[in-house]
Image (cartoon, rainbow, N blue to C red; front, side):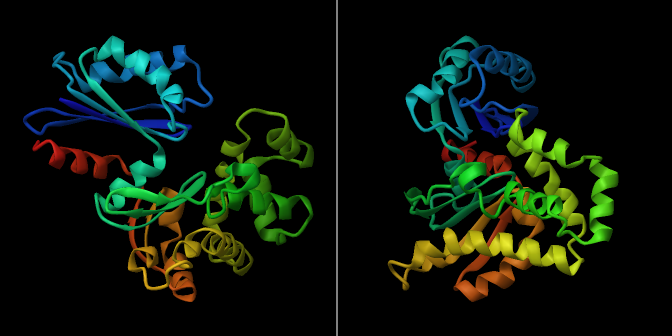
Amino acid sequence: MILIVESGATKTSWRSVDKDGRVRAALTAGLSPTCLDDDHIRTVMRQALPVLNPDGRMVSRVFLYSAGLVSPEAAAPFLGAMEIWCPLAQVEFHSDIVAAARALWGDGSGVVAIMGTGSNSCLYKDGKVVRNIRPGGYVLGDEGSGVALGRAFLADYIKGLVPDDVAADFDREFALDYAGIVRKVYKEQGASAFLGSVAPFVMQHIDHEYIRNMVTECLETFLKRSLARYGQDDPADAAARKVGVVGSFGCACKDILRSLGKDFGLEFVKFVKSPVDELVTYHSKSYGL
């Protein structure tokens, strides 16, 4: 049996695949090693693993994918918990950008764009990440994400730039005054999650010209500052012009992205909301399951 774990800051998608090809699934809280302690990680694993392996079969391989898994030190909390539940398993860990790349391109080539609550990107060739433009996080970057869109909307809202009809809808749904917004962004934990939570509301008003222009500008910034730069060194590099997107925000914006891509010489060819099921296919083929 193999286990595949794909985690973000808010949720973790789990899959197990046994030798007969049977797939079991679980969904738990997030497991980002950069902001969670060992006890939390072990508690979440204790919830998921009995569902994934109710018969207590031997787990031979575990594939962990999470933002922040960039070194053995970062993976240490996961590895310690896995030794309890899967003592004989060989554990392989990767960052979320590798999860997205394998889900989109397998061992092939193309540009990878993660466009969910946050954003990231890379140029992927023959199964390897060859260039990664740093995402910068929700303060310094994350262009083309739910966070960036929420940030842009709130920046306009507090300055009275949002059209009255959209602002009234926001007031009804969020019931936040200026002080409440400042508190959530600057004083409470989970600022990025709060900013990202505004994006679905904004997307509900995509037919409004003002909102559509805001969304377009948010996406265009990502293309300009990240995606289009992968092909600058070699304009003839076909892999650098072919883009795949992972993330619910990017999938919701696919029509705008395809249109914008033409202006930058980019072709958006694949959209995947969540990489985990594509990763099941990828690893199952590798192990003949």
